[in-house]
Length: 495
Image (cartoon, one colour):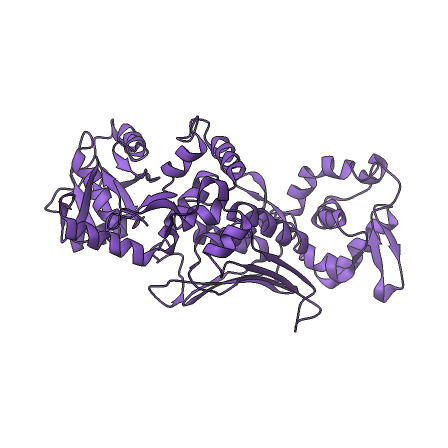
């Protein structure tokens, strides 16, 4: 959120999706009532440090951090907000004063604040706990909007993979050793995550579709969600059919693993310096694509989701419940949760980021990986397209200069080549070799064209580098000049 966008909200004033609170020295109960009502209606923008007349009062800077911490703790406390919400306040400076901001997304289920139900009407938070009709209307909106909340009363713990619940608990504790799920039983975790639900109109209780998709045995998933299938294809040589295929029809936890492994098998891994950390950008892109296709699809339709890898792109398709059509602009879009229960669960176990971050991450890492931009297209079918070509001048390692590469790679090269060969290489030759080095992890021989694609160098430069590296013993060559290939020598420190 930017100061300019905050000023736009101030100009619009309070309403169905905008609320101001003074909260100079701390939070009051009305803040949580607003969080509850926004969650139960259409979501909304909450500004702390602003009065009802749009005046910027500001938060006391000495308690701002305590307010942010208390906000997170209270939203994680089922005695205050149930089911708990994972949200955090963002600090914004306006005219030298501190304002705290958060966008509250619509929830997939009825949210309670201190065991009361609040709904948003106009610019007010209304307690509708004792109104049977209003509560029924609210539940009807939730039920119609989110397929994941459909209850299956005859599904019992015997039809679920409780070992996966235990695994998810370990993953959550790996993200946060003091996680809310610490010490809970499998049933307590599922209730805490909203996976065991109640229909307020009929009194029906049981595990919902989100729970079945996350932890159900395969035959139970097929029965409850007949259209659940993810079809992964590689189309490089046989573009009319496929070169390789994987059909995934299992729970979302293991489906994620299988699809990540499939993408890793059929795409190059590129390591880059991101915020001074060596990062597998390919893994980040795959994570966003796989998480999106599993978390944000509409499971009521018998439309198989697809992941298709081609020579110049990887793209996904899944049935979508869309409120708009067209391309998503990362600088101007409002996150729209499709399956908030599943999304929140993936966030807890470290397989997704908070709502909206996935779009920004995909744009960020695609630019680093291929030099291009992804296309994210909203419609009845959601499509995500990530280009694989146009690696760019920074090449395979993503370092800024040949000298920087040469300074960072000697240890890696020492695992592959004898020191007497490494000492002969110029910084530019070391950088070039570093750009193509990881290619040899899964291919023995590299061609001129492949080396050119990975390094981002011109054809003449690639030929010169390969020839010099071969002459110095860093590479071995075979074949005629026009079809010559190169590999790491079979002697030295590498296997």
